[in-house]
Length: 245
Ligand SMILES: [Zn+2]
Ligand SMILES: [Zn+2]
Figure (cartoon, rainbow, N blue to C red):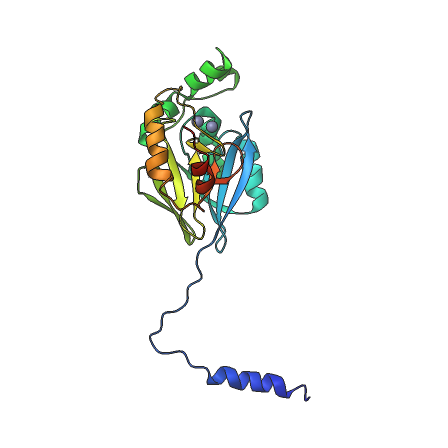
């Protein structure tokens, strides 16, 4: 077979293809990747949500250890656009003010967790003993620049997540829902693989937590992948099937 003839025929075939005028231009569906970095003594999941096409990223709950989080973000090579907090317990936001400055991004939190955020030093002293906040050199926490609420949409590149209000573990807990096939939910400390968040800390409520889980999370599709504040990922279907609370 003549080696030259085939490309010529292929080129002729391409020329004969026609695209109907006014047909929708195919748009590549946004795809998102989740990177996890374990941070601090409570092994909090710092999550980096990467929009694969633009490499812009939402950084979630990465304040537990600013150095480790910063190194990981640099190593992945993404461009952070915001530091979001599912809630304001110290293991999720201890060094968030410094981390946000290093990343050059704004911090986001639900307003109902501002009392926790503003009392970070007290949280540290309660969990680690008197004098521990000053030993760590903690300064007064500056308020987050962005206050989010239920239904807000946060964009990064071509991707976006919806804020889902999930009170119970703390008054201003939120989740972040990325809709796709399957969808991905960042659940904070509301729902874990094989467990739920504690409610004995400031502002916690068992009844409110169960209502958040039943009404806002267990109504999502079963194949929704769940990334929690601690531990491995799971799915809504798996947790719903084994739910004993
Ligand atoms: Zn927590
Ligand atoms: Zn936690």
